[in-house]
Structure formats: structure tokens, C-alpha cells
Image 1 (cartoon, protein in one colour):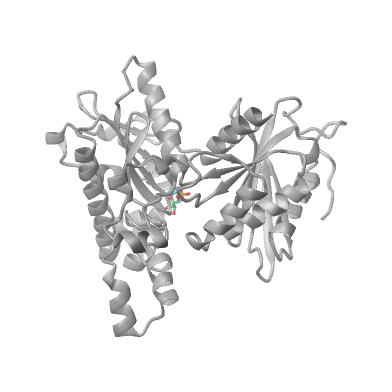
Image 2 (tube, rainbow, N blue to C red; image 1 turned 30 degrees about the vertical axis):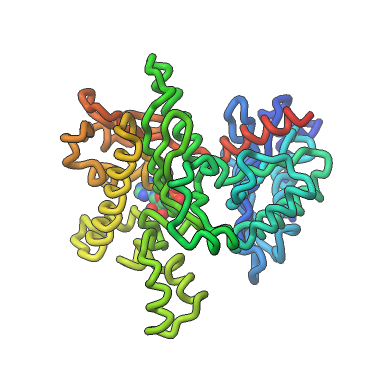
Length: 420
Ligand code: AMP
């Protein structure tokens, strides 16, 4: 890599990060490594980026910091090299990661099983347990382990913390996390509902509680629905600070209609496709996870394209949207009953934050249940937490931007500090 003129000061410190502690957050996918360097206390992102196409012909990466965009292209055979690319990108941008006052490295881990109910300081045992849980998340946990190994080699003296996507939902009530599957088989193969997106559901529900508490509401028993609608999508019912149900299950396939995943589907589809179409289990898995959902219904999975197509009269896109919204409304209704009533609904993630049509269709005609949207507030494009229900709506409806990296950084800092 080439080295342009340094942008850090003489001591090699990042611009604007002289003294405050920073956390490096790593999110390792099977062929990607996302990273962010941030100050979790001041809630400032200093740099972020991604290494992509790991293990493929030609890798590519970039780092963004303010107006600066530092690109990289070259071979990235594995996550060890990807980590070196990340440190190289920081150096090429004139920022030394070694001198950025990094006090913890936070790793996003998709599957923590029943065992990890909170973030963990990574030692060899924790690392091996994450590897062992790979049977439950074959696409995700092995990549996380590779990321952890590579980062620990590069930063051996800094605490590494694993933050689990499933941790928040380990507190689900037994009846919500248990499948009505033969109990012996379920136990032997660790089959239960683990949920996912837990870091986001926890973060968003805490933001809602904090806002209402600041207005003088007693939030100890607040009945919330959180709708995390991104490329992956999930719903949760939260009472006080405890999850009562969530839509994702053993894997992130269950629940809502997603960009490329079916969400809920009769499990017999596996047997039917195997018998009738001669498809292998892997082919069916790929079909249900990668080429179904909105993509499979209308050939598009980006809601910018889908809403534009609907406006242009595309009937397949319109049907896909109706299927998407129908599923969402089923979950909203069922969670309102699970909670015994409803105080708030929060929309978050790419679609939840940016697509007013989805919010409007999901909640239209529910005035009898105390849900009244303010059409103007819903249509407004603003940043930050905002209310989109009418003043006379019994249920408060909000848009709450999620920030999983910030949540991971804050939890990592807490664990690192308490471990000292
Ligand atoms: P996420 O997984 O949270 O990053 O969400 C990604 C999805 O959000 C994309 O596939 C888009 O469908 C949707 N999205 C993001 N930004 C917008 C936007 N400005 N308008 C419409 N849809 C958006």
C-alpha cells in the first residue's frame, strides 16, 4: 500500500482523538470484515470501513474518516490478511491504530447459544465455545472466530470482548423459546429459538424507555414492540427491559419476510422440494435464505427500487409489498396480545428508518386499537429519534435509528473496564 502524507499529529494520534479512549468494533462475515473505530462515551465515530471479497479472486476494501476515503484492492485470502489490510488502511490514512488509544476490541458474534447471556471477555475457552457454536451458525461463527484470532494476534495486549447477537434473547420465557418439536431431539441438537439482532432490539428498546422516562413516564413495565427492518428483519415484544418474544428462531430465517429470506414457512417445504424437485438440503437452504423473500417475489430486494416500481405500476412489486406488510401486521397484532396491551412501537434499521410507505401500510386502519399515525410526521425525512404517531394516539409510534456498532463499543468498554 502507498503512504500518503500523514494526517495524524507528530505523536501518531488520530485527528480529533487525542486522549479519549476508543474501541475498535469488528464484524466478521464469511467473506467480509466490517470495522469501526469510535469513542463510545462521546458517541463519535472516527473511522469506519469494510474489507470485502475475502477468500475470493480479488479483495477490496476502504476506510472512511470524515471527508477522507482510503481505498485498497489486492489479494485478501483470509481474515488474518484482512486484519492486516485494516491496520494498513489506518496507516495509509495517516492514523496509527496502535496509537489510537484503543482500550478494547469488540467483536460481533451472531450465535452465543444458551450459554452466553452477556458480553464476554475473550480468552481461549470463550473462543473455543464460539467455534463450537458454529454448528448452529455455520455461515457466521467460523468467520467470527477467524476475526477474533487475527485481531488477538495483532492486538495481544488489548482486551477483546465478544458481543453476542443472541444474548438479549437468552432471557426469553421458556414457552416463547421452545419449539413444539420432540423434546429429546431438540435437546440433543440444541434446537430452540435463539433470536437474532439482539444488540439492536436491546439498544432501540432502551432508547425508547430513556425517552419516555425523560418525559416522566414510569417505564418499569413499558410494553414495547420493536421492528428491526433491514435486509434481515425481525420483530420483538419487550416488557420493561425483558424480551417476551422475537420472530427469529434457531437461525435468522424465521419470522418476517426479508430481502432474500422467506421468513416463516411451512417446514414441510423442505421435504416437498427434496421429494418433488430432487433438490439437495444445501440447495433448499440457499433457496430459502438467498433467493426468496422480496427478491424471490419481485426480483428486487432494495426498497428504493421496490417503492419506485410500485409507483410505476409494477404488480409483482405491489404483491411483494402486500405480503411483506401482511406478515408484519400479524406479528404486531400477536405481540400486542402477548404483551397484554401496547404502549410503543419503534421502527428501526434501513427500511424501518427510511420507508414511510412500509410504516403507513403496517399501521393503517388500527385506530380501534389506539394506533394513529401522523401522516406528515411519518412522511418527514429526519435524523434521530422521532415520534410519528398523532398526539391523540394511545400507542406511541417512533422511528429510532439503530446503532449496533455503538452498542457493541459501549458494552465492550464496560466489560474491559470491569475486567481490569
Ligand atoms: P440494513 O440491513 O439495515 O442496512 O437495511 C438495508 C435495506 O434498507 C436496503 O436493502 C434498502 O431496502 C433499505 N434502505 C436503506 N436506505 C433506504 C432509503 N433511503 N430508502 C429506502 N430504502 C432504504
